Image 1: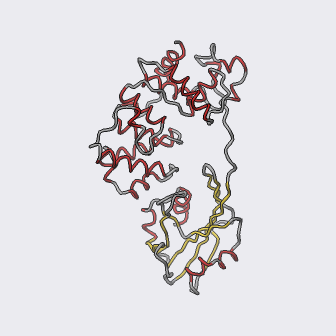
Image 2 (image 1 turned 90 degrees about the vertical axis):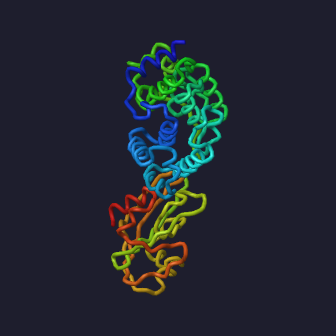
Image 3 (image 1 turned 90 degrees about the horizontal axis):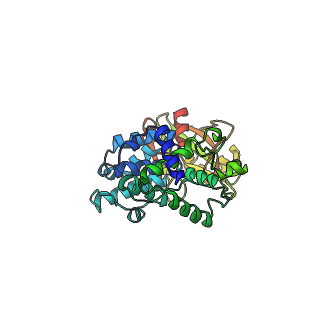
Length: 350
């Protein structure tokens, strides 16, 4: 088959140098794949280097505290990936004695490991003939074969997986999988792909039919929800502030944040000062309150946009806080794992 041979030939001449391509250690391949889920290589590479430096083996990662893992992960988003990463490391270190499963089906049983990640590890580390199908692969296959089935539909997932199985090189599954992903990332890009110099341009169906720009097809997501976050940033004697750890199954589970008043619309200072949570914290104390910036900081997540403001509250008396809140030294605030939204604020304010 010409298709896989051309992809592999292109890859061997054009592939980027990546540290995870210089090893077949399943721990490092697994680590790279989890980090690179929903993350660009340029963003994920420094995190990969940090994790492999701080936790060179799965045993080192398993022994870490979750807060340490979340702190190192800070800024990558989708924090459930970090929690699953840590849980799986503990399972492999303890239950499997540090030995990773050596086949697709068993890898799929690991927490946080889906079809794509299991396929990548199984093919790269163990030579199993299982194709990877990620965003890059969907794009290459949909264009090359001119397929307009939505890639995020049940039918599309089955159809593209079937095609991927038909065209994977059984003699070089690892090289082929990396080749088609790299081809999608560098050559068959989402916008303005290099069709003129593409090695597949003589047989690409969407290029022949003028449909390159419209493929792949994806069903539109649900409407994005707006949420309004009003953070109370305490400065007690210019030495301490108040934080709390988020619990539950919502966004940012187990990360830290400042006291929060969430509203269903834009609110003003009068609303904040009259809120029960604000009153319970201040309890008739003397204080000064100012708005850090008038305009919103808008933080975009996959299904929701957070419209955020920060209210700075200076006081000389320690507030009476409940069990959910902690009074901490301002100079130590950077030691806590927080969402990147708050990390950026901390860097600019404290």
